[in-house]
Structures are given as C-alpha cells and as structure tokens.
Image 1 (cartoon, rainbow, N blue to C red):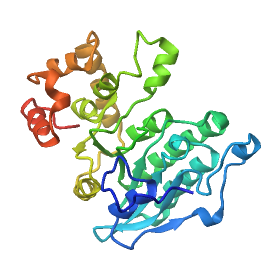
Image 2: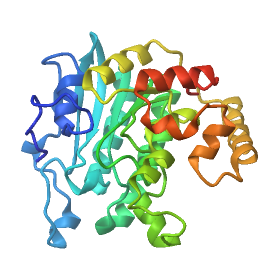
Image 3: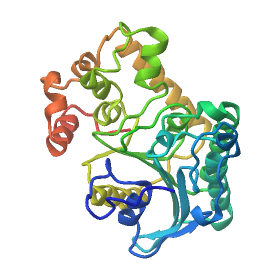
Image 4: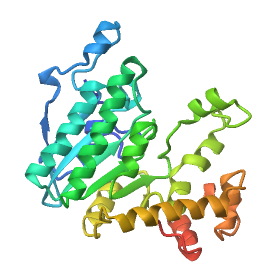
Length: 304
C-alpha cells in the first residue's frame, strides 16, 4: 500500500506520495479511488519470485474534480519499486484511459514517476507500455486532453518516458527528470566516460526540468510546490489541444531533425543553452524559476 506519511507535512511535489499529490491537486474531498488497496490486486509475478507486493501495485487511479471539472487521474508511487510498470500496474492505467473514452471527462491527469518497466516481469511490462500508449492516443483522438505531471524523486524514464511524450501537455518542476534511458542505464551500457550517473549536476542539466523546457519537450515549468502544479493544470485545461494529425507529426519530425542539425555536435547541455541564445549558460542551474522563465522568454524559448 502506498505510504500516506507526510501528506500534510510537506507541500513539495518532489517529496509527496502518490496519494498525497492527488490530495492537494484535486478539489477537496472529490477523489474516488478505483481498484484501491482493499481490492488487493497484487502482481502474480512478484509473488512467484518472492518479492514484496503492494495492494495497489504502485499506482493510484480514480475519479475526481479539478476546479469543479470532472477528471480521471492516475498517480504512480515511486516509493514502490521506483514506480516501475508491471502487468497489474499497466492494466490499471490502460483501463483508466479506456474508461475515459466512455465517460469523456474534462481531462486525464497522469502523475508520472517511474524508472520504466520492472525487470521482474519485463515482458508483461513491455506489453503494458504498448497498451498504455494505444489507449492514451485513443483518448486523445476522442478529444480528451491528456496532461502529464513530472516531478518526483525517481523521474520519468523508460517506457513511461515514451508515454509522457505522447501526452497533450507536460508540466514539470526543476527537480523533475524526463528521458528514455535513465542515467544509471546509460552508464552501465556505455561506460562512465559516456555518462557519469553519480554527477548530479550533469544528470539534472541533461534530463532535468529546465533543459526539457528549453528544448520544448515540456510546456510548463513550475516551482516544486503542489499548489503550483494545481494552478498549472487548471491553466492547461484552458489551452487548445495539439491534435493528432499528419501535419502535427510531420512538424514533430522536422523539429527533431532541426535539433540534430543545430545541436548534434554539442557535448553538454550548457553548449546547447549557449546556442539557444541564453546569456551566461553556466548560471542557468542556479536561477530561480521566475528568473529562469524570464531569461528563457528573452531568448525566445517558451516551451513548445
């Protein structure tokens, strides 16, 4: 079962539990959990391997209201196996996305915190990721906004990093990290010379919230505060949908080609920041959020 400790002691999104985030994000008293811990839906694979199980399998899903509007929500619990996706975990998220097509809420909110797929049930987890993506795109095709929130201790990597980039909009804090392969995976595969996962400054300037915002991969960068995330989601609900069209896909592909052409020779994020026109790129990690957003705006970088 997800840890409820600290829900009311801290308003930090980074430190809050899956349920703690929902408590502060949604309208007071509006959340109704689906397939909660009392259902005891545990992973059969973990039990066979003698691994500890959680009665919610590391993800909280349900209905709620945000600023009076009905929403469906899913919140991954980084405190259980780093939010990694297994069969039951993935099925709960897929089912929520499929439910949205029938209920047509104002939005689907995905509070993402995951290191990727569980090695203990890798095949089932990989299949789950593909099912999640299919269901997410079906929800978007039905005109339902899918908004992702990233900012937990374990970041958003692996298959869930792909899921995140399938959302309509992403909201992240400076502490949030987004990528495909996590730092430890890169170091293990390619060597410490390629990427030193113990270099926290390197990790954050490479996959952290500020860099992802400057690249246009996330649309909103907020302070590490649950109230700030709530305000940003409310604002996002008023934004137009990106839409799933051939033209939007071609624009995305062209943007990636331009990025490779412009920054392919850069060896560090600071070189990219300099190429983007930011003055004093070495100072970017030290800037508070309001100052950073002002500097980014002056350089013409305001998310995607």
